[in-house]
Amino acid sequence: MEVSWGASGPEPGDNQALKPCLLRRNHSREQYGVAASCLEDLRSKAYDILAMDKSLAPITLVLAEDGTIVDDDDYFLCLPSNTKFVALAGNEKWAYNNSDGGTAWLSQESVDVDETDSGAELKWKNVARQLKEDLSSIVLLSEENLQVLIDVPCADLAEELGQSCVTVQGLQNTLQQVLDQREEARQSRQLLELYLQALEKEGSILSKQQESQAGFGDGGDAVDTGLSREPSSEIALSSQILTTLTEKPAPELSLSSQDLELVTKEDPKALAVALHWDVKKTETVQQACEQELGLRLQQVQSLHSLRSISARRDPLPGEQQNPKRARQEPA
Image (cartoon, rainbow, N blue to C red; front, side):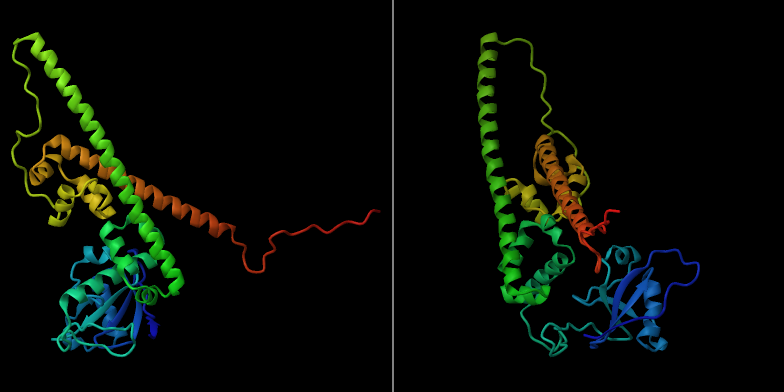
């Protein structure tokens, strides 16, 4: 695919950070590299770079991978660098392209495809692109996304990543090891929880025996179990995250890092109402999610540090690794 970089740059005095983007017309193979500070800036440059008729204004910018309409500057700033955009003019509709095969750009309206298979393919390709940009993101993936990449045929994943099948097979083995490690950690935590529950039960029995011996005295203080509370406002977590929290043992191991961050930011009382738990149990799960998130971020930082150290140690081209001093002849 031919890539041309636009010649237009930021205007003098523009101090906003520029985001590199890839821009093309609908049904076109040729894409252009553009640096824009906001959506309006990207639209303005699209008219000139793509030679679009301004009478067709306004143009619509959509994501090339799935046709999502991008019409919010905050969302635009959250997108990664080199995101691919398609500029639609007038009544044009986004058309899906299968550039991997290099044979055709097919419209979704003219191709009868299975929606489930298409969605699954887009999902694993999006995860693969994330992995291609930063290999250390393996640590941040959810168990579901790890399994998605493991199940992809080796040849298809190798083509998407631009690597050999041998390299991709090693990558899938690594993904399986990460998945196995999380499962082992889950089983260990389950055993620990069973042990703690047994100790708590034994302590409860001893406590009841002591109370029965002491007889009926003053009324015991009411214990706040966190059940008496007023329902809070609705939470921002998806039903999938709530299902994982309620059904999965050690749910923090199943969630992605983004989902873990959402769980930790929720109000414990509101989350307890949504999960039908008491506040104490909810806070315990949130603490476990926070610890797992911190551990993953620490692992990513360690990988980045090792990568930086390795890059600094690599000698520059033509640079001697062990220069020797000239031997001086005795006078």
